[in-house]
Image (cartoon, rainbow over all chains, first blue to last red; front, side):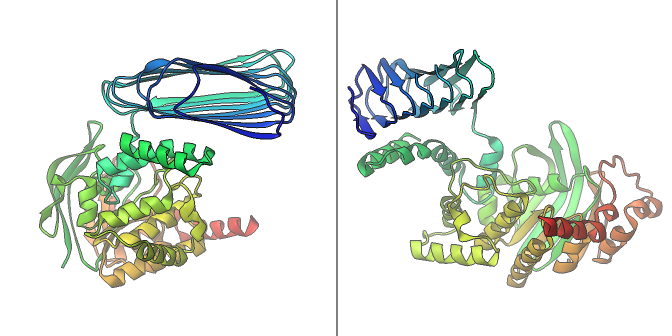
Length: 232
Length: 277
């Protein structure tokens, strides 16, 4: 798959290929929108970003099943950018692994990898991934955010971000939070007359809903909204 | 007539007994100023009345108009007519303020508000509280300044119209203009007939909202109860006289007495700070 249009949007709804590779050409902006509502399975996506190219990847995952989703983004050219967002709802007895990595291989490259998830019932959710700044990639910025709310006693969430830094003069950070719903947040909402159930729903909505902002197709947004409402 | 009755209330936090038998009554239209040194249980009392699960009630009773609040979850206490303006309101990521307010308002009603009724009420409330309406699109309390959070608490009080409102240091972190707005919001609810229990370290707020009575909480119990003249006495003389006259030893004194933070120094300083921004 290759194109020279400066702006391009690729959308997969439930028909995400098991493996594909894509190159973002010089100065190109690529938006990859993925949404999944049916079966979760193993997938590998490789993205190369050339100079001043920008990759914005989004995955709204409401599927069921077991597997490993692997994303490797290589920022090969100077000024290349990557912005990745995942919102995953994991209920039933699904076991999902997300390995989302970014490799800074040129100076002045920027990446934000953000993974949000909810683990319910017996669901197991694992966020891993490497943010690597290779030698010679100075003035690079990289950040990883992983947050998982674990709803039920049998549910499991684990976030293990890795930063590898091989150059000086870079900015690198990560935040990983795994935990139950914040009891102070719940109390605050309940003290306003909102039932515990509704309070949990509102907090969870607030957690997953921001993913909708990346999608432009109103029908897909509506489908995501229904999946969020139905799943929590 | 609405009445909140607290009898022999005992509360434990993390296995430590904080309140050792509190007795207080607040009637409709009354405003009680709750004073006392820091760390003696004022905030604990308010949190326990609202039903914060971190505060375990180990004895006593708590009734609003004869209903047993202790049997109710916080949402039911809110619907019964209790409101707590928190000292540190939570920031809730991703939860839109307007969506939250709509849920809260509808929870208090049999029939959901129409979109028109809701936005009307919302716009008026934001205007009265001097908060730009744009703020209703922001996530609840997320990134709000201290003063914005406090005004946002008052906005919620206005929209929910409680029978009894509990205000935990609603005036801390407010500049003089915001203090005026907050005092006006309280006065408005007082006129409607709401009862208030107000914790503050500033005589200024009390001077603006005219409490009808005052109580001093020391060592987990009410040491003194009486008219608003108690506020003036503490504002000028601290808590020493309680020790001298009543022989009550103040067990721990983490914060200073009230007069070290009273209006003369604090509010003026805040005004100056604001003027310099």
